[in-house]
Image (cartoon, rainbow, N blue to C red; front, side, top):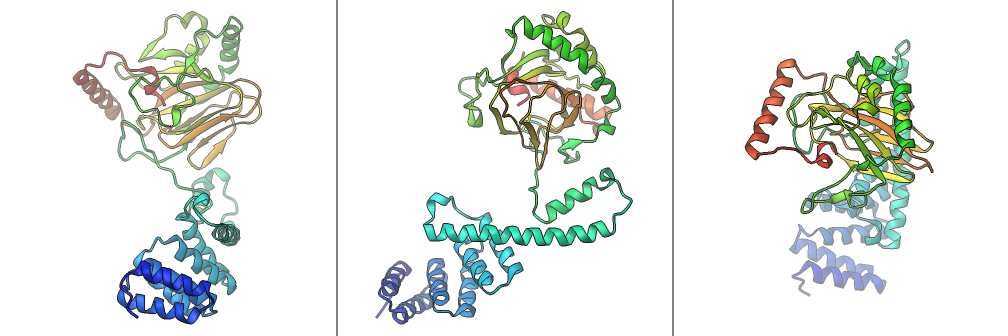
Length: 397
């Protein structure tokens, strides 16, 4: 019998196995391997046959060959983990399943048996991660007595990253990436000496917003308003929607005179913030209103040279905010600064309105020279493109 194509061999072997003739199926697959040793599917079927026959060592050897052909083979990694799991090799199973889960196709593309195996993989992997994490934390905690949580913050995050508890997120500006700045999600309050003074204005800002809202919120416009012809991507649901709106107090580097008389204390508060001054672009500040049961999808900002400052004004329950791997709850009057070029999202799961005062601030790691030249660069680019005024919706997504 001559076999020239792996697909023919696979089909014949599967028929033989369905008929209960494992010896014939094995003979077919071994001939196919001899003819085409780089066929992933043949190696996978051969490994599956050996595993079903109880020859686990030989099956592992076949899986090694399958992974030689394709190191990211989901089926090979899953089968390898299942064999380790059956043998009680918890650590080896956890590591194999970690890779299998990374490369797993969507559930609707898998049969019931494979999805059941994936469920087992997830359980074993979680047990593996829990055990690994416990052992690492025991070692770290034994050497960390007397250190504050602030002192341990970076180390704690390193442990969570190293053990796979959290995912790494980097800054990915959509437009302007300033190199060699720290890759941070939330920035320490100590980097902004004006922050406490800024927070002290919270009652005044709330009072001014409440007075404005009682007269109606006509000045609030959709936060996302993408021009026709530009890609909408994840913004389809919120584009030109009143579910997420904002009232611009500073726009394209200038105070919006229409609202200045209504928000004097708010603008006074913003005068304490270290806002960037760039021609035709910043400073920018707005009051952001998120309607009940609305979620802002994960996205990135335009430039890591400037950060984003939030001052929560109205925060019902079931509201949250994630930047990278860290999720926080807003607290009225407690401001924070974050890099919006790290993937972030927000949600309002309540039945009430959520309101935050939002502003841009300089990245504190830029030098005075770099700040000045950043403005020079952007001004030159805008001049070349004959940009008179930038679209509001594209400035601070």
